[in-house]
Amino acid sequence: VQLQASGGGLVQAGGSLRLSCTTSGRTFSRYASGWFRQAPGKEREFVSAISWNGDNTYYTDSVKGRFTISRDNAKNTVYLQMSSLKPEDTAVYYCAVGQFAFELRRTENIDYWGKGTLVTVSS
Image 1 (cartoon, rainbow, N blue to C red):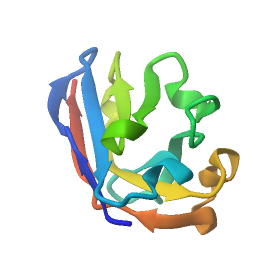
Image 2: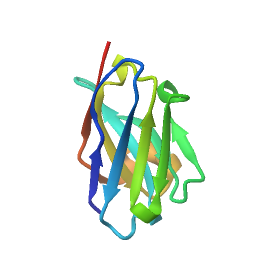
Image 3: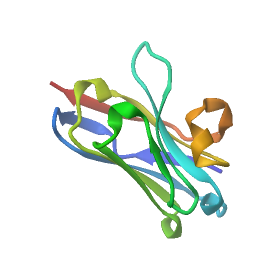
Image 4: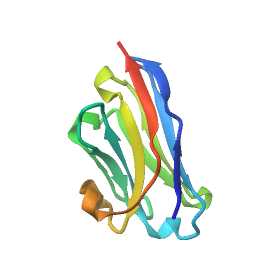
């Protein structure tokens, strides 16, 4: 499974961005999907995850109420809608897939990683 993230960019604090992660693999709908981020000098951290059918979603506390994860299995794409962005959201964002959405918060449960997309939030 090859994953390609896109949609990053430079945005002012309070603004919005939508990240997309697309795969060419036919088995995308079988996987839970998620987003991680890594800020300069920090470890990669879990952001959000969604079950294979979209019924269950999970968020790290710092993005709850601001970010929304969704997926379109017909398009083999998972999205991360980010609103009310803060400078501390600045990071490279990575998409990933694994077996179970709840377990995706741990990197050891990731089956495949995509290349990252940079999000920069200016104050």
